[in-house]
Length: 318
Image 1: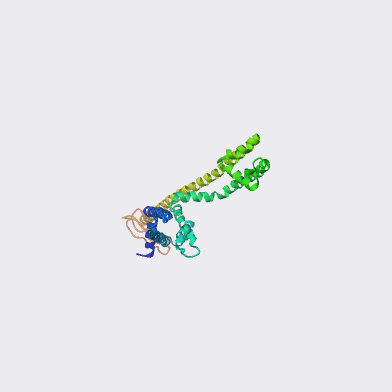
Image 2 (image 1 turned 90 degrees about the vertical axis):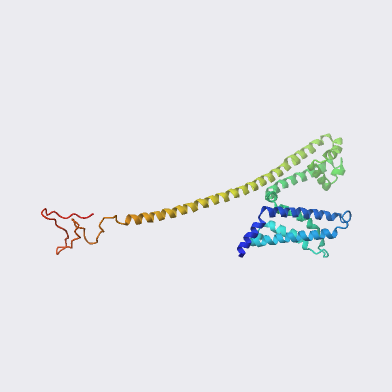
């Protein structure tokens, strides 16, 4: 079996549904074992060696999976950013526990994030989030401007009334964030409303603009990006299908063109052959009548045949 055949077989294995399902189950089991390590000082005090062996086994399987993908895809493997993410997450396990970078081993739990790279639906969502960053940045920037403006205005208006929430700019910014979440906002607004009843205009207006308008704009940008990402995948599938159909039609047209060409050659060959019983055309003269052969011209250079008494001229043989 050649190298190309081995690569094709490896690609079929890593692309199969069963293989993907197996990897998902192993990722979930690995996440469960990493969670069990938090109980080694309690109920699982004697299971350190077993959990360590399980960790080694999971890392070995994931490393073998990546090696198989590299062999199957070749250089194309390194063109996918998700593959780089997988290598980084799996490679964290290679950090020595005794070195100064041992704290990085706590990031092993990030291995569960490999579910994003394995499941296409999750990849679509994350890709849509990244694609929405440019449009979302403008909306978030506008939201920050509104929050900062409201913080400065609230500090000037309610500094003396409620210094606990509006004592300085930093404290007021945190208060504005709390109001933005609409979580326990009456507890913030009530002390001010007790002394300044008209302050409800400030609080209600701020919450309506930020929580109900600006945040919905952010959600709208994300939903639009997600819809574009899904439509892009469907469009690519449609283009691939149309390309395959077009190629099939073109191949069929080429076959028909070749058949027509062969038929034309056969028709020309049959049409150029003389029919049975007809005389072969002779160059340089005409066929004589009464079955006579072509006459050779005399001194005058004319050729012909003569019949008996009638003296009529010969007929040219068609």
